Length: 113
Length: 115
Image 1 (cartoon, each protein chain N blue to C red):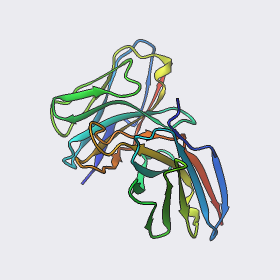
Image 2 (image 1 turned 120 degrees about the vertical axis):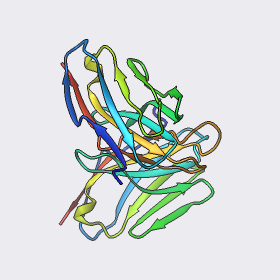
Image 3 (image 1 turned 135 degrees about the vertical axis):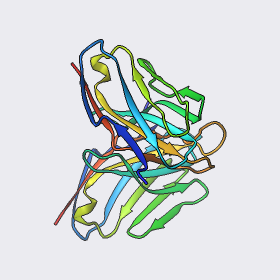
Image 4 (image 1 turned 30 degrees about the vertical axis):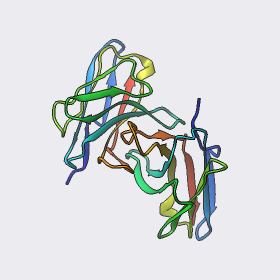
């Protein structure tokens, strides 16, 4: 089992460019999340999904969009990249339950210049 | 508004000694607490958790203590090993309702265990 797979691992974008961060999981978890981690800070929730076709905003959603057409995939879209979006992005999954921990991918390091 | 705080950015410990990492929270709705470990260039890895109905949970060398009245939790690692050197994140969640497993993280503490 691969768990949670993120691609790409690294990317440099120019201001105003767009890109999609890919996330796929083989754990059959209903819940999926996107977090970002800025230097010296904890992870902050961007968007989350509780199942295919259902998404909702987290703490820092501005400048991002998501979709969830299948259980396995949860891509994160940046439409107009800005330097403030330079960060490390983590996709995670969680199982449905009262007490659930998140399982994280290895991250995508994004630099916007 | 930082709802979960780890006030020590770093901690240095000798191999074999105890490491104690601390975490404070402000949101009374949190009732499930987790510790994650993170190595450079990797994603966070779940380490141990505790629900608010308990005040202690143990897993091998790792023990988490919860003091609900003080809104404080701590992670004890005994004995500490060089391989424990990593960033440790405290996280909190509301277990019920519409929380859907969403986590609020602290800033992290860099633990260095010296041989």
